Image (cartoon, rainbow, N blue to C red; front, side):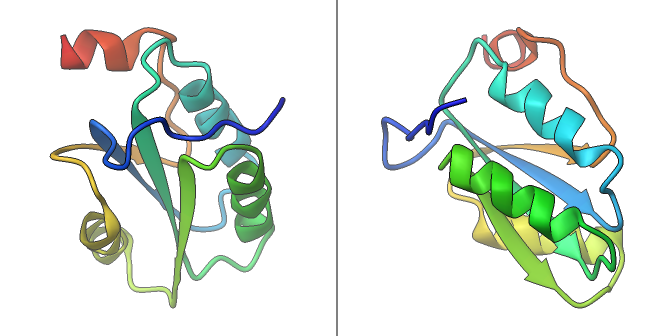
Length: 113
């Protein structure tokens, strides 16, 4: 999969993904985002103090797709992780995902229609 770069300076929607020790599921979640037919998004993976390969998986995804960013923080819980993602988001619209959620290919297009 080649690198993808956002075409606008401000994405239409920010997807905040709270993740802690999510190495088993995070690839699938991020894969469901990169497969979206709607392309004008950013994803913030908020690594909430993981001790597994979550950060490495998120870093690899961010290298492959510049719309994906990582926010690393000490463990503080899912609400604090989501708040950290909100603070770093750039879009006017927010979507919260857990690190084991999957989106259908046209989910963002339907949500933003």
